[in-house]
Length: 78
Image: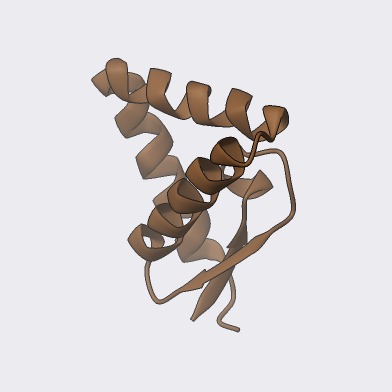
């Protein structure tokens, strides 16, 4: 298991997500962003909007995805 924070993936806070691969932490952060936005958190709303914008441009979205996977791989095991 490894840990990444919301901030490490482009979000505004230090909430930590654990997973055995990058996809698990990415999915957990996505869920966290959606829940925070639903609760009215404007700082997370900006991050969620940026995330949606990345995926409208596949090249930019894949760049973020590859970089997040590299960052995850470089982390030490918990």
